[in-house]
Amino acid sequence: MASSRSFLISDLLNAYRSETLTPTQVVEEAIRRADRAPDLHIWITRRSRAELLEHARAIEERAIEELPLYGIPFVIKDNIDLADVPTTAGCPAYSYTPTRSAGVVQRLLDAGAIALGKTNLDQFATGLVGARSPYGACRNSFHPDFISGGSSSGSAVAVATGLASFSLGTDTAGSGRVPAAFNNIVGLKPSVGRLSTRGVVPACRSLDCVSIFALTTEDATAVLAVAQGFDAEDPFSRRIADRPLAGRRCGVPYGAQMQFFGDEEYARLFDQAIARVESLGGTIVRIDFAPFLDAARLLYGGPWVAERYAALEEFIRRRADAVHPVTREVIEKSTDFSAVDAFKGLYRLTALKRASERVWEAADLLLTPTAGTVYEIGRVEADPIRLNTNLGYYTNFMNLLDLAGVAVPTGFRTDGLPFGVTLVGRRGTDAALLEWAGRLHRASVQRLGALDLNMPPPIPGWQPVTDGPSGSSTAAASSGLRDGLMSIAVCGAHMEGLPLNHQLLERGGRLVKQAKTAARYRLFALPGAPARPGLIRDSTGGGSIEIEIWTLRSADLGSFVEGIPAPLGLGKVELQGGETVTGFVCESHGTDGAIDITAHGGWRAYLASANS
Image 1 (cartoon, rainbow, N blue to C red):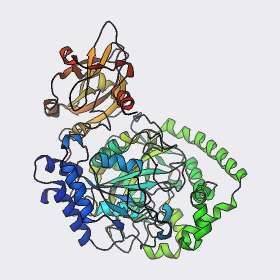
Image 2 (image 1 turned 60 degrees about the vertical axis):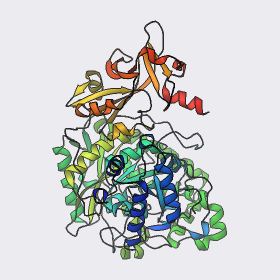
Image 3 (image 1 turned 30 degrees about the vertical axis):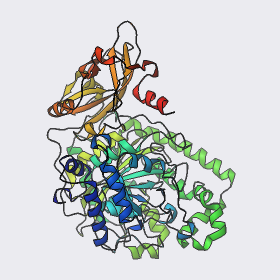
Image 4 (image 1 turned 180 degrees about the vertical axis):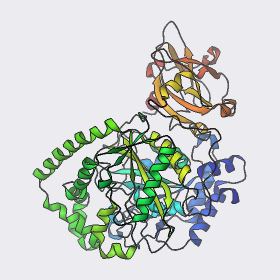
């Protein structure tokens, strides 16, 4: 396992392809790591060796090209369902055993990932500390006397200590970001509704997100590509289009609005992060943070806390004694709010959303500390609510204002504890934020999590495509080649979230935009396996076909195209508006015996109809 000590996704996939590792060997190593790890109160339920080996052997029967997360080990916060494994939400008396995995978990399993077990959390996902659990206070991966952050505590520490490649958490108030900052890993809080919450024990159902923890932004991006997707069974699921950042203006709160709660080292480290952003080409603009702070206060100080009671009302009435005292105090105060208060809260939030829009006229993304300080477990247990509130200062507003965020490591205090910042963007900017966060991560720290390993080298020559006045993604798409990058249009299984998308991601490919061809193309479902489409130009008819435009290093284009079988090849594809871009087209003879699926308007729509 020397070449894959970190369990980085790219390392494992490369080892599998070279046949120097198998999923069975990785599972055995994961079990050994868990057995040898210090007792940091990470786990609630570990799957048995027999179950894990059975799963690994089943994956080995499949082709690696079919599974973008082939043999990748991960863990799941124990408020998210995994079939036939108890879900406790951090409360043994609440436990139930689902027969079906949560929607997002099933997508990962179908992509070849291996679920190792369920992890500890602040009970009912209520808290940012990781200490409100009958399974023990989860310990910080750098110093066991300090909090791990919560509520997704065990999920973050499992990744930081190398027990899993990635993990799932949830994030309503900051639970997918604060633990990332305290354990030197990446925490992605996606746009609300981007990942299905079906099969997740609700905290605030209208605000809940499933979050992703990983050692690098590249790994987080690879997981997001599989995990995301509309779920018709989840009433809160949304179809969210990717949105670029308009430019490089980073909004930072006015100095008087910054809070570090006496932590001078965190203040110094944030100043360093600002300087690094500027060195990477960002422009710092000071913004009025007041609308965001006012929105944050609504989460626990307003009627939204009643959503937590709504999720657990019947259980609390029956078994209030089984609820952690601090959790019960937080949730039960929600009964003080009336329906009138709920409407007043909605009106106040609507006004704050409007006020916050002025900030986005001056800034393309926000830059804040993920948390203003970190506390020892003993201090939190002595003053649980006030110190927890401090930790939410930079996080509680995000879902209320429908924003996306990436927490990323940027430094260490002199006592060795990590510090991190969060990049915040509007709904749909998830992928663009991950690109920026990846650049900042590499410029700031070298250590991976709490491991004795350094950040892997970047892909040579790769630079993320930026947007707006200082670098237009549209211009990159139309010109074809920019800064060593080649733009390429894909219309089938290489599209985001589909089975062959990993072939682009592994070469550093980045999604620039979703687009449509000019209305003079036909799309065919080609005969044979695997299922794939063929795009053919038809000047006498045809229609407009959905495609995606990706950037790929020109040096990697050859290896990518080499794996594309005939009758497919590269050609020029005309887009709506007249632009042309290099993309995959099909030789006309290749459509013999194929089904014309042009009327569906794209490969995704065709697949959906075929599966309905």
